[in-house]
Image (cartoon, rainbow, N blue to C red; front, side, top):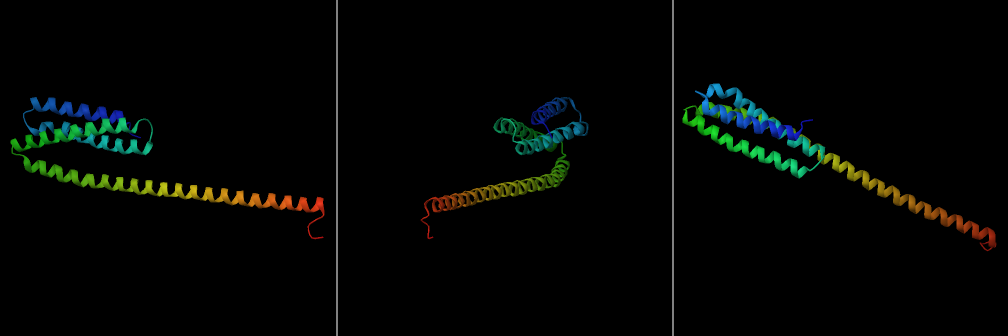
Length: 165
């Protein structure tokens, strides 16, 4: 399982590292490994958000808020990177990067859809089990009422000799 706080720290440090390196780098090629790490950290943070939703441990609101804020920071920095690629005349490289990212995001979206479908099935099964428990409990209660009533009727008939004999 991916720790959301570690993922949060990873994305934050990756963004700051790329910002520092961008100030002193001569060309975009030298930034590529750091930019890659930043996108990896963003992906890890997104997966951590999914894991946090699955685990339901701790404060979901707090974890989700922190990760969403970090992802928002990453989106803003992506826009800065896009402008950097534009100003250096490498927008075609940026477009290829975004196309590849879209392919990879489609895989992540498939995983999210699968998780949501499994979650719906689990909830539906849980609801069905609850319904069966209610039905079994009610049926058992009714059978017990009839059994106790029958026993009392038999006892009444045996002690009073008034039941049709």
